[in-house]
Image (cartoon, rainbow, N blue to C red; front, side):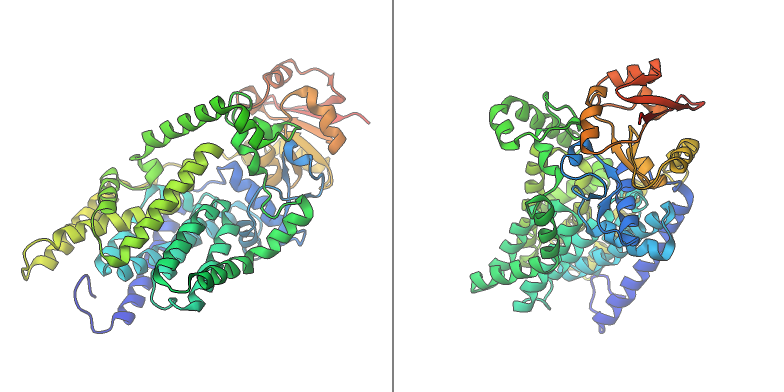
Length: 524
């Protein structure tokens, strides 16, 4: 094997190392999954899973989890107005093989974690050498954050894989002609269908292509054509359903997390504010939101819960941005830095979500290790220089791995919601149909584990009659978490939970559970 040294059969060695890393990553992931996985933890993961199940049943991209904001567009069946479609589509294929359950979702998520590991190696050996690529792959393989997301059911592992694939093809030599421009655009389109925030990366990738090619107008045309191949059907679908090819309920998030619309409260309201008008007329609220997001970003930047890596490696990555790593990497650093800053700027205005930066983790690692390698190349030309480089890189890799290992003994979900509320979910499933709508403070849970259409509760109980004009809600389910876990809603909901009135706003109490959970039914 070559770790920075000459190798007579480079292609064969790359294949062998990539296969080894794939197998090792699968073993590490399974060990983590077997030790900690106990069900889906994130509400978003349950939402993606329920959409995937609907796709698997041939019902299309229909959401079982609904918001009052979304009900203003469609009732039931509810065309997905929120999520990008690729991850639910992948989950649908997986569920047809593995079944519609938490384990199938976790295994599918883990597949993209495993695939990313050898891809990191291939990027590293392509841009630098095998030593950098191999060590970077190992660090990612044992990253606590990477493994956490690898069983989460979220889109983070898929996004990291697509980002790596995109930039691997972008920096490779086999796709340098017109065909390459089309393929790079196509991968960008697939990436967009996985995560809408990929849209802000497109200009930087196109800029990279234009730096390397002549006849720039044809580059743009081929890139755009490639992008539209996978995205056009989704754009047409959105235009026909919502009047805009780029439609998503996320377009309203710039007004959220402000004094006027705290946290995600707008999703619980039956109004559609003019976002641009709000930004222009409430600059103080928007700037306060930006400041809060920036302080959170700055405070967490070196924390492994944000970066996914040891803080020392993050320092090396920052040094790499200003250190010459080679002609091939100079333009790539511009793409990465530009994409990072563009996403940060967009999220500060929309809503700062740290986990959306996870897809940059492989490149933090690669750049940090490459900096060490290039720095050691400045040593006098001695026979032992390359062995010294490999030794230093190996020692640092060991330190960075041991300093950022996950906890194999802590369950991912200490108390799975589907177990805690199994009696409530069973009751609602037995007393309703898939054409009914149930309002709940735990709508994600009910949509996935109960296989029922569930809406977030409206912002206040007084909005129930207005919501029912859009779509009649047969049941209202207030779980015992209503006593503490309705952060965006009006406090009047908690008053209702504790008072347990026999009747209010057209609903009568149907059942009270031992844990305090309440089920109300709509009067005929």
